[in-house]
Length: 142
Picture 1 (cartoon, rainbow, N blue to C red):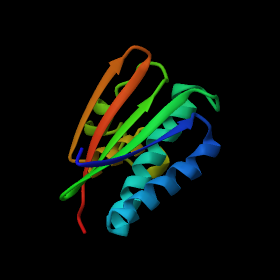
Picture 2 (picture 1 turned 60 degrees about the vertical axis):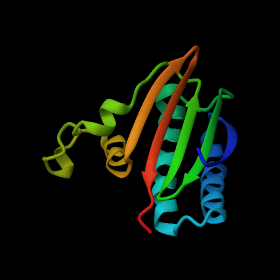
Picture 3 (picture 1 turned 90 degrees about the horizontal axis):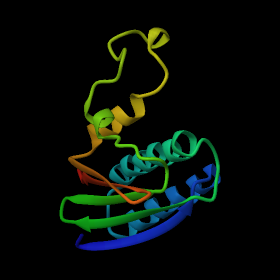
């Protein structure tokens, strides 16, 4: 990463607001246009909520980190959590079940990850010890 900033959090839904504020203020400080910062905030909301609700089964003190890097034309996101092993990349790039059906017939879940996949340019996942590491590159459109 050319320039980066990192923040730690606990896996609690109450930490989502501060995580989004961190993303928005850091993006503003690096001149990232507001629409791109909002796209990144959506990605963080999806990852963070899934970590808390699905990875940990609810609020807990488990650690996680967000790191933002900036390079010409892109924001780089390193997302790390201590939830059980889970590779979201298949859900980023595979079409969610029932996407072609009406909203009332569509199963719950999977759409957020799919939308994240539509916003990012590249992604990498790895598991090290007891931690999930996800690296995403979001192109800046502004």
